[in-house]
Image 1 (cartoon, rainbow, N blue to C red):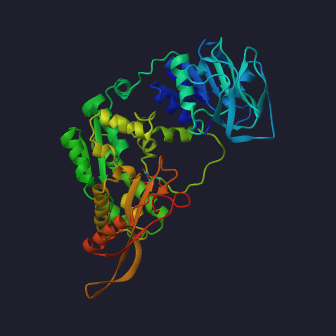
Image 2 (image 1 turned 180 degrees about the horizontal axis):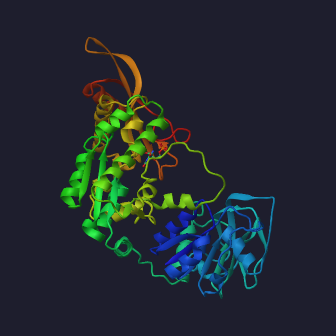
Length: 512
Ligand code: XMP
């Protein structure tokens, strides 16, 4: 495999992705844990990420010096390139000029990195992002590609198989970047490119067995894809040492509880505790209108219910979570102060300390779409694996103002109609997330010969790659009219439907 040493770049995870797209397994370790990861993984090649630090600072991050003596190929990107040259005897100077964005580099010499890809004399687009610059290359290095602004755009020591670049090959704005990384992984490091999800599955199963031993594991199911895939994988590893808990607080979508219960109990035969906690949730939500107060109440109540259920089964040694790679990486980055809390996300954080449990997180190395591939590998249906994301606080954050049983029922019906129409139109997979929101606004309408004075329903649909940014899905107006007509006709309590045209930013995907 390839070890990626993280110096804190925002895009380190993209390096891992590009390596895996080449069919080679890779893992990221923060620079401070790189030594241990090296010993554990026995990698065939190393990549240094970029990062926000300056090698001019005292205490800025360094690569373990022994990596340079291991006889392994190293690809060093951006900050990684600077620290590599400095650690190997070159010279880096601070610079007031920072270069960001598109640049064109010219290939001036051959390199194993370019084999079958780039030839001398060609010009290629890359994505630069750097502040400091290498002024003198480390001994043994020579320039193989350059631009007017970046005389050492790519410098290599072909004999030692050290490759350094000032730009980011991992981002899409470097069109051949993925191929450069694939060349490094397969051609230079000699890895065969046969890493598959089937291998990941069997490796993980062995790992889970080793970690858990004869201990008991408890897993909270949200109804979403990640926790379901984690649970099925863990069950395959340790069978009935796993218990799943599914908390129904009355804020799920239409049919969701039935689907989860059927999937786990009937299809997989996995022990599942289905907790009917509707009263607890609805009573506690009464009178709450502030979005954060709602979120906090729901998060805390989930933990209480979960805790109580865990006690009933005699406690557990491990808590399983569907933590994904982007969640892990976020906590590794050190690009400045804490970020502002836009929303308190609901998860079962806080539980491990409170219940003194260790974590089992078998999806920690995967991206969302890789989890879907693993889900298919484990036999989950396409319909389940391809589901839109659904937030932990559920329908409660799609009912601005006070949440009541009645309003949850109204919203469930409208939402089900909207999604049924989306599926019928063949649009479900083209959309990241689509849902209805029940507004705390009443408006006047006329149906038949009667005046109505009922609630407004907003429809939302967005496209996104990671939920961080989103664009509005551009429905055909005829489609929206059809949905609006059906909702007003079929759902008592709603007499008006509007479409939310806000992208993210400035909006967020959910309304609260
Ligand atoms: P926002 O609304 O912040 O949401 O643009 C981005 C993505 O995250 C989902 N979301 C959540 N997921 N727990 C979750 O597991 C939460 O508390 C939560 N809040 C929002 C949201 O549905 C969207 O996909």
